[in-house]
Length: 478
Image 1 (cartoon, rainbow, N blue to C red):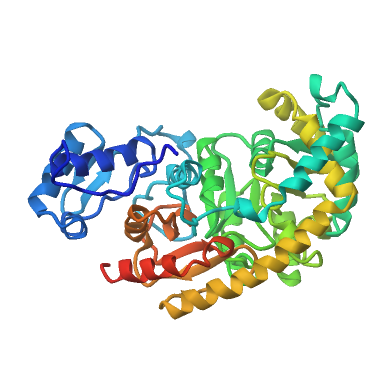
Image 2: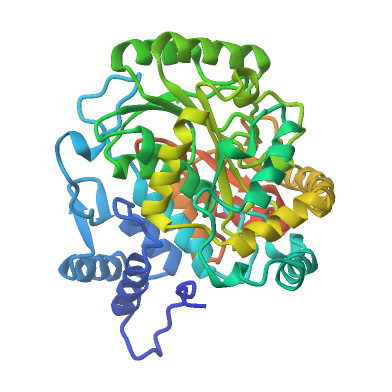
């Protein structure tokens, strides 16, 4: 692994304690495991944690200042230096229902810091902040069998040429059949494949939006989506997400004032809360979309972990104003980047054009392997096993969380839990990172950076009592 080891200071090392501390934080910053804008531990906390004098920590932070890696903010502490940001309308400043004199920075790099932590592998310990199922929950023989079947019994030229512009026709037919299980009626001709659900969301945004357009987003929500839209120059309109769905009053007010072009939402097993949209709320959202003339992008990434009967916006409006996005990284494997969007017929060619300009085509071999898993029922059986295992993992994680003084602010459902740790989870996450535990602190799930006592846990990777003991110990210092 290329990740830095948890800090271990020694007076017998070839470097001074000051140099060791500076090197530790410097490596974290260079690998972007500490995102621009992140606050370093206070001098006093850092000194106490590593059993050194405050003078040693100040000297280490001074070295980081001299290297241009951090900046000192008067009476606030030391922060990872920001990258230069564009100004003007294309900068994508976040706005929302709460008045503010100077909106805080939208947090795109915070999301990539968490992703880099998952890619680097902070340690060999389970990662409570992981966004996918752990590898040992996935079915490697199923994947291998599907690939062998495609390569040995399929078109031999499949692996030697570009795929079809809209995506493999066999997969699109299988997806049309699968979508019917959720009540979404889409012909294969209405489906465009992508390299994962995130790419599908990007295709939709690039096809339908222009810099400066306003976009409604759930808050809390996933920082990657906030970051992606911000980088495209969009204005974010955060809508508070509750147990039944978005706050309709806030959504209506924002729609009247800002005339949004899109509403991007996870309606089923919302990330991070686990909430699912109710039927009544879904109808009201569709009425608002019609009244204010905006489209809805429904990200159903967690479809295979949820009951099929839960309301989907795309099912209720028949893919008129709604575009439906999903993929297979949460259930099959993150390494098979296969996603798709089902869209109104009049938008399909526009989506294909954007896809061709970004990736040319998508890998037909993997797409047919996914089609094989759908056609043979092996994906359905695998999903049933995962859901049953996840139910047990969720029960164990909830018991551990409650036993160690945490509480859930949303009923535990699906893959993720939304947990109140009782103190700001951003500095808490740095403490736990030193011990090899990767967290997903609450500030990641807001469109603008703010302190939060919440954190998202992955039930599949939060069953280790050592993590909860380490968390409880770290909370005593905050």
